[in-house]
Image 1 (cartoon, rainbow, N blue to C red):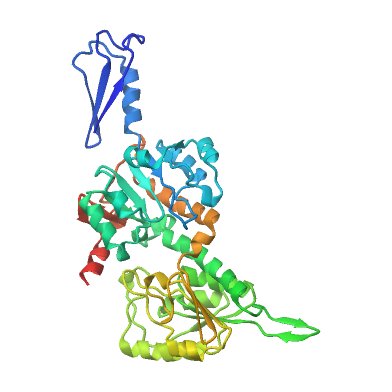
Image 2: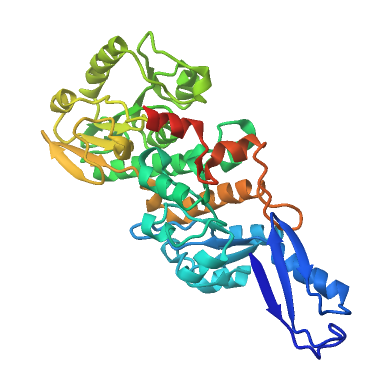
Length: 430
């Protein structure tokens, strides 16, 4: 893409001719300067122009309601400026996280309205994917980075391919040691597990801790957590601090020690299938195992005041763990919070983004508790993004995508009209 910059021909010794225009052309990240009319040019001034032209411009979009988080807080803007990048921010982007535009400007960002940002930014960061129709206005030179929900958003992938846009889905960052600081799934699950337990304590019509008073003894609440991933373990830690008795179910035997160390009781069904290549995630189980699993969960669910559902399998529908028969067997006044609601839910009666009551049991289908903590949720998300972008930006502040890097390759969703991620490809083949 050619950038044309016009100068005053009488400014210093820049030109010794009638030429007033310097044209800088970008070809595969190589910047060449052309102007056959220029007889004498200030070399250092020219070099500065070239250096400025190759600095990557990173755009931060304002999220659509009801999302309150923002992809980058001012602290993240400062970190990117230190990498010699420029940062463009849509006005109002930080309002949901209580950050006014003036604070972004003080951090060094440039405020720019959305339409211009989509045209001028080289790399656009977001939390939730933008509308498919808006993507049609974005040209093929752009790079998009966000939580693009690739396993449930085929229309988005089709448009990214059609527009030949390079995109990186943060959910696809490989689960390896070097990428831990870029893992938004763990960051947002930490927020969700914490907030879900506080919501449960608020919604439950009884105390979490045990109380001993002149009025007698109040027994502690009992919680059953389904899934001992990051969200489940965080929920366990918070629930124990609030005084609840907590049981945790997971098909992965490797998490048993972590559950016990946090004060939980591990509920185990013998014969679970595990796969080391699954990157720490749970995998699909046999029908026989599912039957024994359902029986055990129903036994524990009868005594639970709260069931917190967190079990998910990447690229697949969430496993059904709580049947309608189990709900019917629970005590009236009990509570189910289903963090897996967006992928079908662990409870058979869950409705996504809704609260329903069946047999006196309240069922909350909420997969976006991280949105309820926009300040720290945005901070954690932004740090993950900055750590990933450090791999994208070279010492001069220019974009440099090295697809031999397993993190860049693994996180890439689309590039040059191709669907790049093998797990996403496989999910749509099936």
